[in-house]
Amino acid sequence: MVLNGNGIASEYPWETYKADTTIDLQKHHVPTTLIDKMAYWTVKSLRWPTDLFFQTVAAVPGMVGGMLLHCKLLRRFEHSGGWIKALLEEAENERMHLMTFMEVAKPWWYERALVFAVQGVFFNAYFLGYMISPKFAHRMVGYLEEEAIHSYTEFLKELDKGNIENVPAPAIAIDYWQLPSNSTLRDVVTVVRADEAHHRDVNHFASDIHYNGRELKESPAPIGYH
Image (cartoon, rainbow, N blue to C red; front, side, top):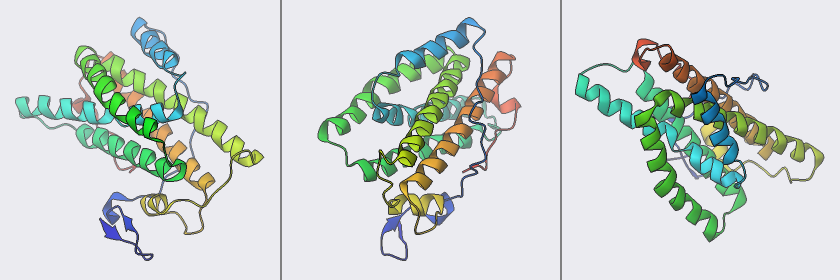
C-alpha cells in the first residue's frame, strides 16, 4: 500500500485507472441455445438475494476462470493471449467494488458472514461449472453483469430522487478510479456501472469464442480497460 496526500492508504498507482463511462445500458445477449437459457435463468433465480450477495459473487468468477486457464496453459506450455490477465483484472476490480461499498455501507456481522458463505459455496459451484462448460460459465457471468448494470441504474435513480443520501466518495474509490477529490457516491456508482458493462461484454465475448469451437487464447483478450 501507498499513502495519498491525505495520509490514507490506497492501492498502488499502477493499479488505478479512469473508467470509460460511455457505455450501452441496453445491450443484452438474447439467450437462444439451451446453455444460454440455463445461464440466464440461473442468474434470474439468484436475483432475490441482497445486492451484497451479487457483489460478493461477482468477485469470484474472474479468479476461478483465470486460475483454471493459468493451470491449463501451464500444462500445455502455451500463452493465454492476455486472457489470464483479463480475468484476474476482472476479479480484482470486482473486489474493489465490494471494498468500496463496504466503506459506504458499514456491513453488519451477518453480511460479512455472507462473504464466507459465498466463498465456500459459490466458488466451488462455479469452479465445477467452469470445468464442465466454460461457455456456460462465461455466459452466466455476462448475464450476472447485465443484472448488475440494471441494479446500479436503479441506484442512480434513487440517488437523483434524494431517497439515498449522496455522501462523499470514500478515499479508496477516489484513489482507485482517479476521481476528483470532491466526488460523491453518485460518481462512484457511475464508474462502477461502467466497469460492469465492460465485464458484461468481455464474458459474453468469451462465451461466443467457446461457442465457435475455439479456445480463448485464439482471440486476443480485451485488456487494458483497467
